[in-house]
Amino acid sequence: MKIKDITNYIEELAPLPYAEDFDNVGLLVGNYNTKVTGVLIALDTLEATIDEAITKNCNLIVSFHPIIFSGLKKLNGNNYVERVVLKAIKNNIAIYATHTALDNSNNGVSAKMCEVLGLKNTKVLIPKKQIIKKLTTYVPIANADNLRNELFKAGAGNIGNYNNCSFNVEGKGTFCGNENSNPTIGEKGELVFENEICISVIFENYLESKILSALFKNHPYEEVAYEIITLDNKNQNVGMGMIGELPKEMEETDFLNFVKKTFKTGCVRHSELLKKPIKKVAVLGGSGSFAIKNSISLKADAYISADFKYHDFYKAEKQILLADVGHYESEQFTKNLLYDYLTKKFSTFAIILSEENTNPIHYI
Image 1: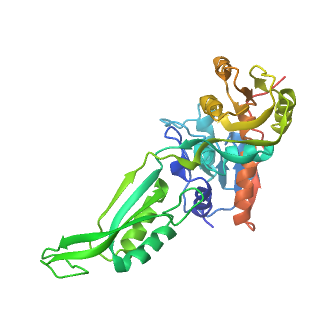
Image 2 (image 1 turned 60 degrees about the horizontal axis):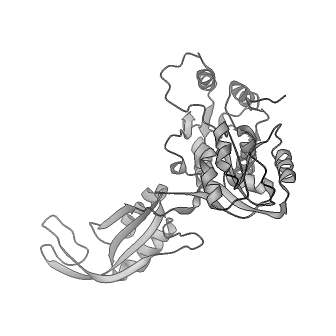
């Protein structure tokens, strides 16, 4: 089994185009064609993580956070990032990171937070924009059903809880091939009027090459007329954070104690208590102050995230209870998410959950 076999499966859960523009995801160190001896799943990749991988005979580390976040101009071991990369290269250990690709996945970091909290009726908190594209093409009526079905098989036509969605309009197309053409219908130099169907389907942007491959393979014309545009529509199943409901409403103090216990944190920093029950809860793993406004607009009673600054707590505006559980604590279950996902597919292969606690923050 090669590294690409593992990473291709991970990318079914968290496609790399889901990642934010500022991020650095994918295979950061190593070669996709390297044979895998074992996979170590970690939240961060530190020198201790590399040592653990060596001890456990794992030459691929699947890490949530990327060890290389911005460009490296030198590799001389002057900081922890360079030392990790050098040690990984020296010991032939590959490093793969998912980060915001998994954050934006419908079954990713925030979904796992909802699971451990027992939230029901969950949905994405901030749906992602500009990842939906639309393909429009024109095909003879006799070939339309086959082409449409092949586009569906390639992943086109999925809208929320519906699949095989398309729009079809019959019309008459014209074309005239020159002396170098090889027309499927008609002859060179002949103006042809053909009854066609205009097919329009949407798809997620990371599927574009697969969609175009299906189009060209199954379209009968020598030259395929088509257009692809990016839509402003939000993808309701992809995006940052999630919001859901507790099975039963809780008093605020009980809720905060429940959150502290669930996330195994030494401290929960929170905004002013509002003396109202907590039922609807928004969550977002990692640094999530940017989603306070979204949580309020969706009428969440509480919002759980991390890295709130002093003035962020004022943004509660007496409308929501903000709970900062800590960055590591909010994302700690991501390792289990990836482990469970990979072991279902590669049940006979060495998938190992890192035992290292990489939280740089300690409490007294």
